[in-house]
Image (cartoon, rainbow, N blue to C red; front, top):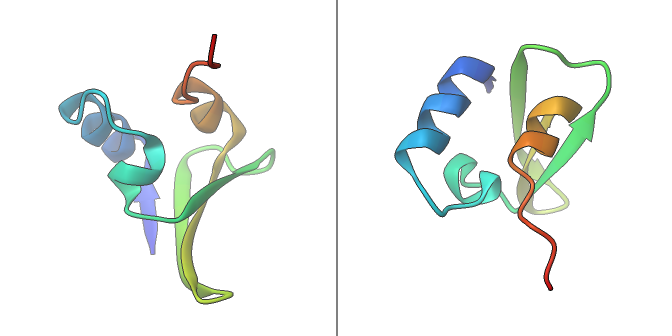
Length: 67
């Protein structure tokens, strides 16, 4: 499944305090330097649902580092 970045941004804005993984309903989000405008969601990778997102998107929604 492909999700446009604009849709991910809208979902993140509506889900304050949630992680990118929570909003996309995936186990983990991996960054890709070659993707630019879509997030790919893969249903069964090693028994888990994962996403591959543009590196800039993953960086934008990275949780703050613990103090």
